[in-house]
Image (cartoon, rainbow, N blue to C red; front, side):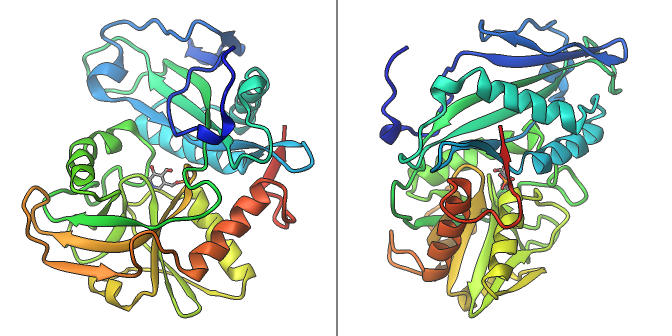
Length: 344
Ligand SMILES: Cc1ncc(COP(=O)(O)O)c(C=O)c1O
């Protein structure tokens, strides 16, 4: 195995060794298999290719300060995958099976689990897809559930940095009463093109509004939104956003710090009142925003409003403190008061 520079990891589909797999067929899950071939065989008519019957999860494993190996809140990811699987009409893995397969994935790829001290971790990616060959638009109980992993870096190194975000006036992420709150592959497909355009313009994040009235903040393309105003942690209440486990954890940590947590509709104009605004998710925990622009048409130069929180790169004290607390718990540097770390 090529030696890994733990300090230089990005967030890439790094090829590790073993993928853990179970097939659902004839009404039951097969015993867990381990494969090192990194390839699956699919019928060309498989549901996943034609109708995007595909969903996934994302969670992390860490080597802690005292050497313990843990996963962060895998029970929450298991419950979210179950909810998504039901939505897609896919067979639903049990929580025990989900956690066991994630654990096996880490244990069978231990040489890729970053050691403590590099701000790095192992990203675990459970994937559930419809395998049945068919043309009809009906669910069918045949699926593959696979868990793979990749070592990933912290993105920031030691210090958080802020980035620019943009609200694209001519793109939506989720339809009202649609699939926005489920972790299905199709939700991400429609963000690829606007992300490409936004990145070319120097924006790191796309912030989407509620698509029905475009009055309220929903979430970023791959993370939830939260803001800080005085002693308040404010995050959107919306049926169309993914229930983020990082956001849920941050809300608890904010309460532990004595902050008030508000989950409510956030009119986009309220951005002018916030002291800090940020994206949050498993991959990077917190991505603070330096500023957020509104562009009526993403491809055009016009910026109709711009909300600045900090100079580029600069970060506010609340984001700093919340980030330190979550990563401190994950790396076993701070007490895990809520029992979030599941020892492998
Ligand atoms: C659309 C979207 N929202 C929010 C999140 C954050 O969820 P979590 O904190 O569970 O990773 C993600 C994934 O990271 C996501 O893809």
